[in-house]
Length: 597
Image 1: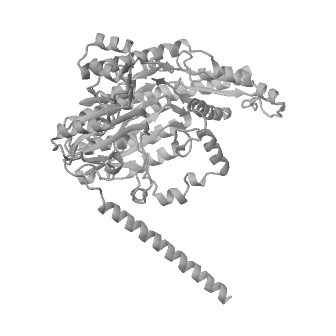
Image 2 (image 1 turned 135 degrees about the vertical axis):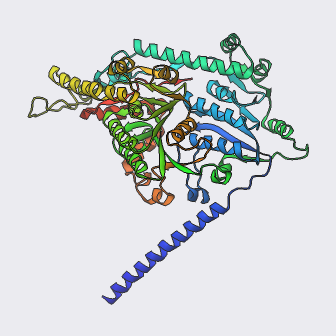
């Protein structure tokens, strides 16, 4: 017994010592990180890489950074880098390495605005591309000078929008979609699974979007490179161009290798010939705190990110890639920000094509309650459509880029009928039921006329009794007008503003300016941007309820999904959402996944 008590005390004392040791290490690392911000020599060039996935938000963890753990770059983090460079007297110029960023055209507009804002400081901004595609070049035109390497190419040969359809694959598998949708012309999200080609409404919308995007692209190139609209049209029709041709046409400033661009920057910044260009990379510059430059201080404004398809539960990374917006996470964040007396306003940043109607309404209700306590401003990113717009409609003000995809006010519900698939596999099943509509969720049978009538009643109730009235109330228009703008119709930001679905053009910075005005914070005063919910520390991520606690099966599924081609992952992401409709969950989803190249 004595020995057992001794062992217990040893374990307790050992555990306490371990906890104290971990706390001491964490404290030392954080202090070292605070005191060890990188030295930035005067007249340095900030080199920013604009490439790959740029999710709206990735939490920064000082402990992870101090331990040498690489943190991925986020889009809002990139904007912060540009804001810091504008006011940092040690930064003499910025060099943007643009290499196939995986962002939409809304983010491209926002990034161009941030580059233009940086240039108002008088600091030169140079853009360098190894191979300039439409979006890369569009971003680059906001810079003072544009460079390609001598063997590089400029592929600004027009815009193409792709629509994919999986009905043929489902037919081969014996799977038949049974779908009800409001606004059959435009609410065609199920078309990917019910059709083999583009419907009239989808074709109309995509053509309108392409017209808008191409017009903005042409105007940006014409303004930046001193061309006429006719010049740009001819240039696009005759693209692509090798770097020397692009230079001859005035589309770039020169065809240079990276070291030669550095020499150009040395001349521009007044370096001596024998001096080496002083550069600092974006990863290192991220360690320079905004506070040290006089930014991110003063009254607090909460920023809540809603990125990905909308789902009930906690926000997470989807098994098939992409992020998922969980209603529990967002509702909790909104409630916490509303209750925090130090928070003067709330920014809800939405980058979502929609999803669960139930989850969207739960977030709508949280915004309704929070609005009674402080102003809420929505900042739309690349897309805030269907369920994403349902949430946004309740804000005091909505801000979007002209190229943002929004609207898609509509609802659909459906289920995959798997009888043919089961027959193919040799599976048979029987149902024993009590209740007239007990079989409404049967996976092997289409809805009977009576069942379909019940599902239509449910769908109409969501659209006519919830979605339309809430849009009408939020946007201060009639329900009839909301229905005219609804029925699943997708709008660009430009069209949405003309129709009163948004208030202002701009990105996150514009939303913050409006939030300051609504909260009666002087326009010339800085504010502290506080992310809700607070990012989880590294140790909680490692030992808490993060991905490390995923089951072995889920980890295997995720690894398998990551090995699939991107098109297949996108199809499975939609299938993952549609699978939930087997239990009657209605969806507010954008009618198609728009990819404009």
